[in-house]
Image (tube, rainbow, N blue to C red; front, top):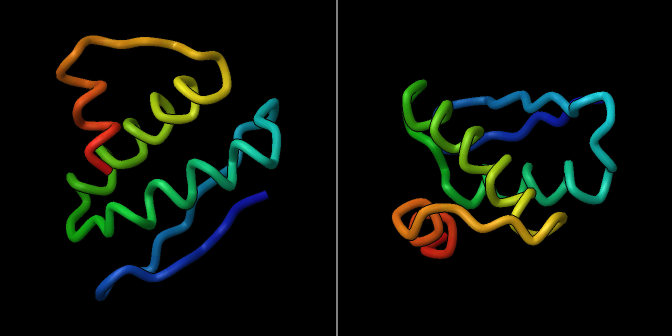
Length: 74
């Protein structure tokens, strides 16, 4: 399964991991969409941060203070 959405001039396709619950896939997609990445570099960072965000919600994971600030800022 995947989702497509547009942000600015980009159409983004996000792929669901095989073992990822749909609820948390939707959380990741919303997170990425809220970031509105404007370049490939920003998109890659948004995808990486979306996994950390999902893990912080799903598994109550904690990361370094810098990463947690980035995640919570959004």
